Image (cartoon, rainbow, N blue to C red; front, side):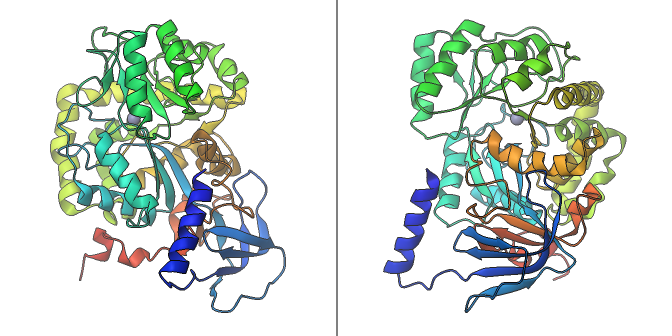
Length: 454
Ligand SMILES: [Zn+2]
């Protein structure tokens, strides 16, 4: 639906304000990796007109008058990366490198949010889905992005979570529900904000373990899923224990926000998820980076991190945040959970389930790490690319418009200097980002890489 509205809005603005139409872009002689899993296609010409991919030809085409021409010889064009699970900084006070940090007080720090979004775009992430945040903050950011005021990846968002009183993530703005009548009210309130999805919590324990806490009865969950669906909104669930995830699947959830990571799953769950064609967000890096911050925090020294984080942010993670993990033994828990997540994602992939890239983090550079970690599961590179693009678009219900380099799709594409289908680490050779049909000036993004040494 947003395609038609977006197109009309753009046309009207151009006509009535007398603004010249956006320049066409022609990318010549490029190897296209289209995101469907198809083999790379060399020698292609890709024409972008307005916000769409207008033509892809296997021969040279004449550039329309005024077009920006990009020489693509030796380069690789693929869809922009999509992160199906983030929690944008700025909606809560302070920093958090793991999970929702939902216990922190609400904030409306748009400046921090904008800089973190620039960090995603800088690394070629052209869409993000926020999977729980301060609702007023994240929907305001989404409005700014959709209206063109904000240079940003496309923002999709769930807003507030839906959970049980005293349940996991119940503090700090979540809607809490005990009965179906309360559930209907909470859902009506959430749906009035036009969320891209609704996220429910089905967790009998906090992240890191601990005593049992209240969680949804599966019958109540089923009734709420159906209520949301009949109002045109898809549902997702945080369910990271085997029996809970199975209950959510049986109750009719549309997508899974994580693989199971509290235990190894039995051999029935993965085939059941595959048969129902439920997409699963991978969320490996949130676990890996917790124990790596304690064992070997050198990833914060990588170019990908240093380009987008300030020295102060890096010092915070390596100092206070690292000490917090050590004090709470969160690293010990995360290492075990990471192993379970890898095993269970392997079972899902083997069963034919659709994985979708998701980080559960706030930092754009983690998307590159997640991309590489999915490859470490033994999944071939072209499939990993599909998981990070087309499958992620399907996860968000946006595959008609996003996720592949194909005629008619929105022009969210990235150019790499080396072949990611040969080595996934070549995702770090990015040279150009095109978002919504416009070349992003990466040198003008509000990021430390563009400020250090000036
Ligand atoms: Zn999350």
